[in-house]
Amino acid sequence: MAVQISATRMNLLNFKRKLKIAKKGHKLLKDKLEELIRQFILLIKEYKKKRGDIETDLKAAYRQMYMAQINMSSLDFNEFIYSSPVEPELKITKKNIMNIEFPQLEVEMKGNPYSYSIPMTNIYLDEAVTEYMRLVKKMLELSSIEKGIYLLADEIEKTRRRVNSLEYILIPDFEQAIKFISMKLDERARSVLTQLMKIKDMLEKKEKR
Image (cartoon, rainbow, N blue to C red):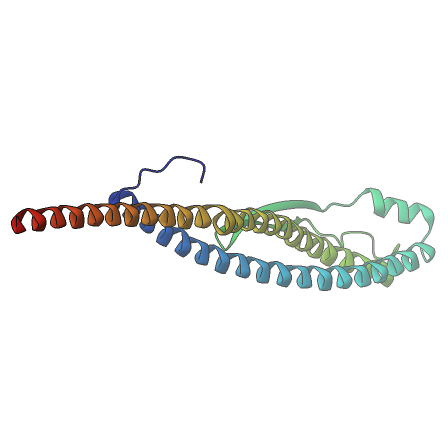
């Protein structure tokens, strides 16, 4: 600690109080950091699983759409592609984890996705539309998880910096200040005691005379 410290009992008590608070804060922050990391790992696992599921579902949806296309005329297929009556309505809600607000994206499809002409289409198209409707919701859910991962990573970094600041700067500074003040007070006490002993000796010598 570079700042000059006044070696008084009041300062000693203040630094001891600050040290106690700093150690308590350090423990709480370390506990928070551990929980944040645990939540982060859980989100990563969930993200990987859902991403894998989506990739599998996308392949199935592509396959169904391809089968629908080759079993329809180009005119009918293009008419279906460019005349969808469905309009997505996005809703954003909040989810709280460790006092961090995570956006939750939900979509509601307005309209009937199966309003195309039945005689001009086939069952592959029905299955492809069903898969894509499911995939939109899954992708938004995956996007919410990905945003949560970034938010948690940011909070983990901030908390780690606070923990390190307490552990390697504030707490050692407070301990050093307490050691310095205690040493100065002890020196002062020994000096006073020495002076008292000298005065006592002088008084004893005078009495003997």
